Image (cartoon, rainbow, N blue to C red; front, side, top):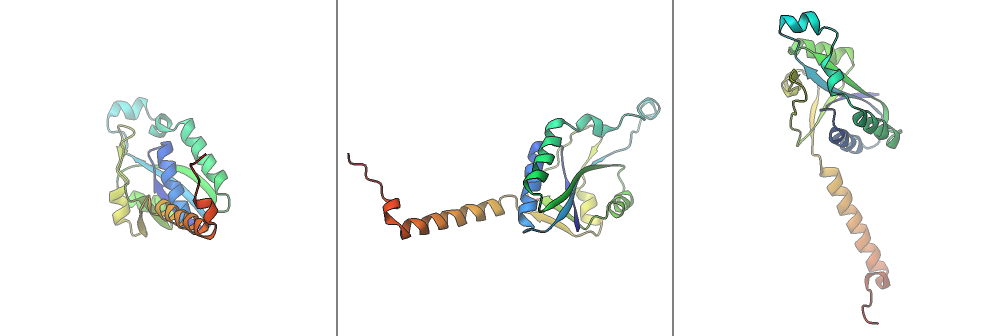
Length: 173
């Protein structure tokens, strides 16, 4: 079982990026960890009064949860488990410990990925990904879609050649 880490901004659009990753794996069964990193609180007031408030509580939403569930339901043969996990801290050592604790085998990032700061304490995880030593892949987001469209178009063109009556439609009455 392969454990993939994919960055997320907890939006439905980020789940669509995950779908592209799943399609590109060609039937491999995976566990997916959707990941976001947050800085630790820095003010003493936050440390005293806000210790019980985690930033992920503010960014998680029902539409994101539903999109994840639908993705798992759509690809049950590929996705064994899909989870959202976060990290509180901003050091490479902490990220390596996080990756070890979650048995991360690979990190996938869509090629067109742009970091979105979803909370005042959000951290861009790309610096961790580049330095952690875990295989890191940038996936062209539209490569699979383009390939599928080209193949469908080619199949349609071949079927029209095989059955010319389908290719021509008379406009005379």
